[in-house]
Every structure is written in structure tokens, then in C-alpha cells.
Length: 556
Ligand code: ADP
Image 1: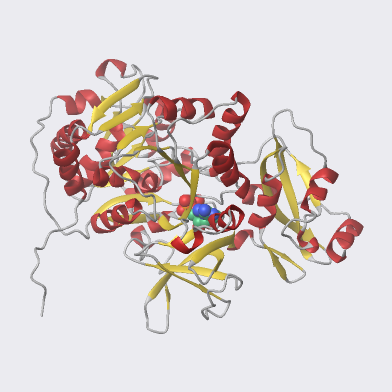
Image 2: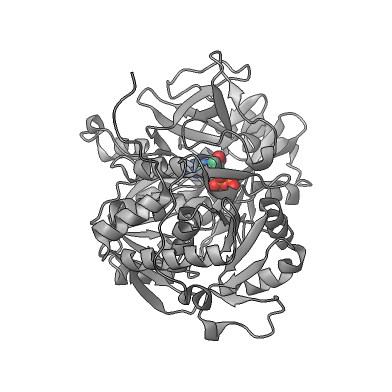
């Protein structure tokens, strides 16, 4: 017997309709590429998204046609999120930090028909446009009078000129909630990038889950600052969760340095912010140097890469800000886990609570997880057994766009497909996930695994260390030994001996302590602000450890 409830497709346009009706005066504040602060409301976003939808009709972008964006976080990008997907087209957010060759490849692979870009990315568009013949129209996200002359891009339009004359009346079409809504390519550190193709249904379910109290806990009383980019993994779903909850949204535009982010947090009374550790490191440095305080910020979700425990402590102990450590990936829309305490933990001493909060957290409803050994047998949730992490759920990819990379899912005994995350993890009896490494970053010394994240976390706790990456280098006896590559804080003094001394007495076996410390000016970062260990390994592939040194450390 079927239930007798209304059939109502979960469509992205319904989020916008809801936002307009229920919190139409909710604020959307953006720092623009132009440098000024722009203010609008959900009602304004809804009106202009309809104008955009009409403009897409006029431009004859077909249903499910791809519309690319190369843009910072801002209100125009938000309109594209809703106007493109809401009208049945597919929003393709492009990461501008990728190499131009990769950007051109991605635009062509996605078959983008129209592409909107912020003016700061004009040089990138100039470098790629001639290689992207399928793009019928390039649109600069600016006023008509800011349109660059002699850009070399044929028929370039300004976004404001393009949508400005269009009608604000538009009936959002109703269609199957499983239709594609948006897409995002992985960083493609090895081989060509592959795209996750999200649906309206997956996006709405993810938005519900993202806003839950044990996830990001976003409400209409929050002012939310997504520093995490809208050009990659949907800014962790915040543009959608914002419409769902009616929170104020504050967009940082291109200004992601510590000073600009701090000023925006203070001037817009931001209560909740989201970003990757490298960006938060810049913010903390700015705060520490200037002796500054937050007057409104009370929570921040940190993810995309492991949040060093020292960062969690700095936010909590020095600035009274709760850190929610989160884990996810492009293929998961992206949220998988967020770390919040259970009721039974609230009576634990602060130190014990911090131990839990360092983990990547508990799976959200909608994300099933398991860890398996090399034979694919499931491992226990005891916080000790370490294995390959597999996930499944309604916002996890089934396959990549155009079938790239073949069928990624691993079937279980019941024939249900699990997505292999490429991460290695433990899960404890309370369901808290802890990522120990990406499988390709695991260091194997004498047959034993060393977690590069554990080794980095200890280095990051040293007051003189600004950034640390642990990688394995070849060793004749032990196959691989860990070394730590370090960037020191401005003006700080640190020696190799002092840092190695710092490892003593910490939660690490002696044979896991790095054999060498290499001081560098900077560590290469990938397109999503994560440390590029592949590049570091390449740079240091000739690095040889003194045999005796490894011997002493390993056997000591
Ligand atoms: P990419 O495009 O680089 O694959 P993703 O954003 O999809 O970018 O990266 C997902 C990966 O990032 C995860 O598989 C995991 O290795 C890493 N990651 C994300 N969040 C965390 C975290 N909190 N701790 C450790 N690693 C993380």
C-alpha cells in the first residue's frame, strides 16, 4: 500500500521560493571584486534569479545545458546557483586556481554553453576562451560600464546589462527531483579531473542535513560567513542551507587574507564561519599579531583537510570560538561527518572533550560509513582498527559524469555499492570517525603504518610552526621513513633538534618520530588550499636520510 501524501519534488527553486516568502528581508552581504560592500536580501536574490532565468531562456540555453561560473563568493554567484539550477540547467562551478589548461579541458568536457566570470578572472578567461568553442556566450559579472574594452573575447556581455532588462516574472518549472542541478570537478591531482553531478534531490537532502544541530547547526539567528569557496563543492552547501534556514549570509569575495576576513566578521556580526585550515591559519596569525578579539563569532566549521588540534585549541581557549571539525569530499556534496559532543561527553574534563573534538566526527544521517581491510572485510568500530573508508548515501556519487573512471562503487555481499573515499580511518564505538591519512599519503616504515596527520598535528602545536607537512622518503632498510617539512612563523626561531625534541613525550611512538626536518619558505598548496604532498614528494625525491640517523630513531 502506498502512502497518501502529496508528491512534491525536492527542487532548488523551492528553496528560493521559501526564502523569499519566509525571510524575504534576510540579508545577503557581499564584499565585491570592485572592493565595496554590497547589500541585498533574499527577496532581491529571488527577483534577480528570475531575471537570470529569463535571460537564459533568451540565450536558448537548453534544459540540462551547462552554465559555467568562475567566480568568488558573492550575491551574483548566489543568483547563478538558483537561476541556473532552478530553471532546469546545470550549474558548473569552476575552480579558478586550476591550471588554465585544466580549466579549458573542464569547460570543454562539461560542454558549457555559457560562462559567467568575475572580472578578476579576465586574464584566465582570455587564456582559455579560444580553446572553448562550445561556449556560445561569455558574461562578465559586472555593471555595463565596467565591461573591459578590447578584452579580445567576442561578444562579451556584462551580467548587469544582460539580466537587467529581463522580466522578473518567471514560473520555475517542475520536473523530476533526480534531474541534475550542478556539477563540480575534483582537483585532479593525478590524471584528468572527474566531475560529480549533483541532483536537486541530493542537494536538498544535503542542505537539510547540513543545517541540523549536530552538523553545522545553522538557524535564522545566525550570520554565516562561508570563506570556503562557492567555486568548489558548493561552499559546503551553505548557499542552500542559507535559504532553508533564513540566516544572514556574508560573502567575502576575493579578500581571503586574515585582516579582511576579520574585519568582515566584526562589521557584519558573523556568528558562524566555514573554511579550510590554511585560511583559518591566516586569520589566527592576524588575530595573534594584533591582539584582537571576536565580538560575535561563536562557531566555525573547519574541514577539507585535517584541522590541527593546536588550531582547535587556539580558537577555543584564546578566542572562545567552538570548532566543528568536518570531513567530506567533492563526491559527497561534500559533507560526511561533523564533530560535536554527545550529551554523555558534556561532563568530561575539558581535555577529554578536546580529544574527541579533534576527530572528524560522526556521520550525518544520510551517510553510511564503513572501514575495511585489504581483503574488503569490514573492520570493527573500536577506534583502533584502521582501514579504507567507504561510504554510501543519497548525496554520494554513483558514478562520475560521462562515466569517467569506470564504475567506482565497490559492491558488498548484498550487492549494494559503496564509494571508496581513498581515505584511511578509524571509527570508535560512539561512531566518531578519525582520518589518519589519504591512502596515497600513508607512510609505511618497516611494514608499519605511520599517520602523517598525527605527525603534522604535533609539529603544528609548536609555537614556532606555521605549517607542516609530513611525507615519506625512501629508505634502504625501512622502505620509507617520515620527514617533516616546516614553514616557521614570521620572526620565529626553530632548529631541527628543537623540533625533534618537541616530539618526545607526545602521543607518538619513538619510531614514528620524523627522521629529518626540512625548513622551507612555503609549502605548495593545491587548488582547494590543501597541501600538495605529491609535489613535495617530487621535490624531495632525491632527499637521502643519513643511515645512522634513521637507525637510531627507528630502533631507539
Ligand atoms: P579534492 O578535489 O582535492 O579531492 P575534496 O574537497 O573532494 O577535494 O577533498 C576530499 C578529501 O579531503 C578527503 O577525501 C580527505 O582526504 C580530505 N579531507 C577533507 N576533510 C578532511 C578532514 N577534516 N581531515 C582530514 N582530511 C580531510
